[in-house]
Amino acid sequence: MIQQKSSSMISTTILVIIIAFVSRLLGFLREVLIGNYFGTSKEADAYFIALTIPTILFTSVVTAIGTSYIPIYSEINEKKGNKHGLMFTNRVINIVLILSIVLTLVGSFFTDVFVSLIAIGFDESTYKLAVSFTRLSFPMIVFIGLTTVYSAFLNANKQFIIPSAVVIPNNIIIIFSLVASPIFGIEGVIAASVIGMVCQSIILYKSIKSRGYFYNFSIGIRDEYIKKMGKLILPIFIGSTVQQLNTFVDRMLASGAGAGSIAALNYGQKVNGFIVGIISLSIASVVYPMLSDANSSKNIDFFKKTMNSSINSISLLVTPLAVTTAILSIPIVQFLFERGVFNKEATIVTGGVLFYLSFGMLFYNYKDILNKVFYALHDTKTPMINGVIAIGINILLSVVLVREMGINGIALANSISSLISTLLLFYNLKNRIIDLEFKPILSTFLKVLLATGVMGIVVHMTYKFSSLYLTRDSFVAELVKLSFSIGSGLFLYLLFIYFLKIDEFKIFSSTMKSKIYRNK
Image (cartoon, rainbow, N blue to C red):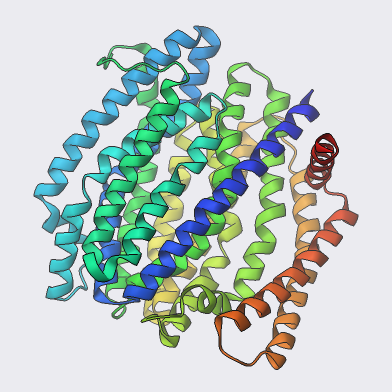
């Protein structure tokens, strides 16, 4: 039974990863177009600040609500049934609506204060642009809140496809606005970002309605489950707020590291986040409701099996991607961004950021899954304490390293703090779950590391070899070199993984075979 559920989980996760890949691919096209039209200019810096501030202000609140919602909803459905679950959902949505509207109004009135806090290194013209752009972007807060709760409801009901795919129309709208930016300017891109979020919330609302949701204005502050969620929210909120504070510090330090540094940091983080968004967020969106259900029904064996499988899947998928990104950081940035006003100098700066961020890629993915494990256990304090410690280390390292390494120091500090955070979470998990075995996780990691080491050598050598014959600096030549080197490394990696007999790979292989034979 557990094996069957694991197979179903992996099958669903693969589909979600494919959808996430398409979404992120469009997101990358969006970033490439931003780089093409605006590069690392002051307009780009102001644009990224304009999108960062509303997100930072509300992310802490909405992340806490969305994350704590799923285990409470699972508990209500287990004990009281679907009707009470829908009532609870409606109350959460109303609370989010009220909070988001208040924050939007406050943010719109005090925009200049928020910009002056985060962009301390901006000159006067860039500062004025950032204030103007940020004021335009504040209405996004309302729709960020709604889409988060709508997506959580669908995920809690094992509906993963629409929440994963809903970003696609958003990205398409922004891409069209970028193509039209010579006419409407970067202000049109910001307006399109707001319109895209509105479209996301509309699509998700129609989806939850089709699954029995009906709206009515009820807050239910005295509801026992709202109170219980409130207790879970506070530690998540504190941890998320500290995380956003870290983002503030990163942007503040970057704003004083030279013109275009914020944009370079953003581009590097986008490439790094591409992996995180595809892998860990996809796996977490599928695994988290399953872990919450397993905990509510006291199915400890399935809980541990699901957790181990998700961690091993992260090792299997992310480790080769992290190593490949580190080895080919400059060529990847060149291929993705170097066109228009994004020149060779911008490529080198952004490539350096990506290189140092890749060191923490695996640990950031682990951290995301491990946090969800604790949340499913209704333990939100442990991730909060862990996060505060890790971010304190990150801020301290960023301040020290940025003096020696410039913008690269911020990236390296992020990676080191992710490593420390992951080790702390594993240590705390061992104390939290009785009879938890780390040997299977460590065994899988060591096998993956061996296969990845061989793959990394092949990727490096094949790229150098292909560069001897494809010396022309062009998009097509770079595509051929990257495809050849990554393809060669991936083939050898899969070959090693097959012979090393990793359980998750065997389940994946058998699942794909059964689907192929079923379709014949």
